[in-house]
Structures are given as C-alpha cells and as structure tokens.
Length: 277
Image (cartoon, rainbow, N blue to C red; front, side, top):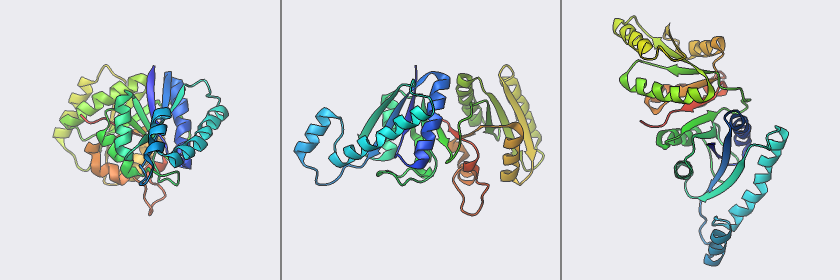
C-alpha cells in the first residue's frame, strides 16, 4: 500500500488539501499519515515532557491538547466525503516545519507529500509557499501542492514545462513514473521566444526517447508566457502542472501567489514538485 504524508496546521487551506488527499488515497489505494509539526516551548517541566514522550510521543501539554481538539475535524471531513474507509493515522512532531516534514517522509517512506499552498492561521506552524518550496527541494518524495479552494479531480493530464535540457529529460522520466501510478498523460510544453533549430532537434530527440509513452509535445511562440500557459491549461484540460527547483524563476512567477493579479497560477491547478535528482 502506498503512503501519503499530509502535513497540516489545521487551517482552512490545509483542511481543503486533506479532502484532496482523501480522494487521491482512494484512487491509488493509499494510507494517509497526517503530521503536525510544532515548536518546542521554553519552560516546559521535565516531568511533563517525560510523561508525554512516554505515553503520546509528543513533548508539550498545550500543543498536545490543541492537537487532540483539532484531529476530530479530519474525521468529520472523511465522514462528509464518504472516505472513512481510507486508512488515516496521526503524528505530532516537535521541531522546524520543513525538517519535520522531510524527515518524517523519509522515515515513513512516504510516496507522496500533499500540502496546501497558502498561509495559515492554525495552531503554530505557518505553511507558506516558501515552506512548500523548501520541502520540494529537500524531500525524496513527490510533493503535491494543492491550491486554496481546489476541488479534487482525478489526475489525467499533467503539464511539464521544458527547455529541453539534459537535466529536464531526467526530470521527465521521474514525472513519467508518477504518471504511471494514475494512468495519466503528460503534455510537454516549451515556450519559445524565437525560432531555434537546435531546440527543434532536441524536441525530436525527446519525442524519440519517449515514443512508447503517453507523452505529447507542444510549443508556444510568444513572450506572453503566463496568459498563454493558462490558456493551454484550460484548452487541454490539464489538472496538474510540474514544477522543479530547476524551474526556479518560473516557479516563483507562476506558483507563488500574486497580489497584483487575480489570474495567479496557484489558484488554478495543483502543482507537482519533483524530488531532487
């Protein structure tokens, strides 16, 4: 059985991502491990700490009480979605959010990490895009960043933005491994700012390398990157986009939320973060 790690601060954004995690777990026959990471408070007595660590594997009374009061919300969501049959277990860890998520994913051998993508108002930890980005950069698991308000759709079409570099071919192979789990198609899209015969040759090479897979290749000749990518997403009915740390500038421009534009990329579809090579 596959494992999904779901880091949560119990905010509305995070709870919406839990709905996504439940449906995804049902689709791929996976179990969910929820994780809340909290900072260790100063001044906690040793006796209380020892008792909690022995009995609950946590280290702070206040944090534990908050945790206990919030966990039933997850059960209520599972009941509302008709997903009580999905195996869900809960963990609470002391430490820094990114380290706790990455280490727990490694220790539990999680296949996928699912996170919400907007700031939090929950218990203690703040799950902003910066945390999501750091998790993508450090984790060995796939990371799915779920936009606030997004409702689950089965993963059928995945967008991969390419410049046809060697590193990207290796990344595409990882995306292919992910797509196989969901029997999804991959759409490789290049944004061309000029005619370039060398790029055309590389595209032909990629097509030959992946000719036996359900991967299509397209390009857009334009400088209007964001708008046309969004149009491509709508036209092709894309419901997941791939981002890697290799796509740093594009990641920042399209994934993190923008206060100046309502068509921010994060509000459209989930983003798949690729494990570091």
